[in-house]
Each structure stands twice: as C-alpha cells, then as structure tokens.
Image (cartoon, rainbow, N blue to C red; front, top):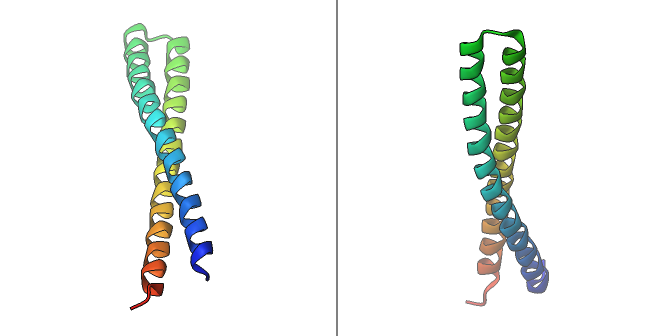
Length: 98
C-alpha cells in the first residue's frame, strides 16, 4: 500500500475516532441520567405498589438498558478503530527508509 494511501486511511480513522469519542461522551452523560431516572422510578414503584408505577419503572429501565448497550457499542467501535490506527501506524513505520 502506498504511503499516501496509508496517510489518507490514517486521517480517516483519526476523524472517525474523534467523532466516536465525542458521541461516547454524550452517551456517558445520558447513561448517568437514565440510570438515575430508572432508580427513581424503581423507588417510586416500590413505594406506591401500583401496576402503573411498576410499568413506568420497567419502561424507564428499558431506556436505561438501551442507552447502556449503545454506550458499549461505541466503546467497541472505538477499540476497533484504535487497533486499526495502530496497525496503520505500524505499516507506515515499517515502510520508512532505514
């Protein structure tokens, strides 16, 4: 692979990493919010002991779990891109003239 192509791929991976890290920061904040909401809803359901409150707590928990899955998928994507970036850097270093 030519050095120019490697550089372009490295720039692309770097840009994607930057975007995913920004998205992960937002997802982290949202996870904190949804977790707090789920705990509040759970406590309200325990205190009120009504089917409606239990259903609401279940729904809020589903949203929190969905956000957790999204956060984990972002983390996996970031890890994969970091591995790709490392591989590209290794290839560039290997192609440097001695």
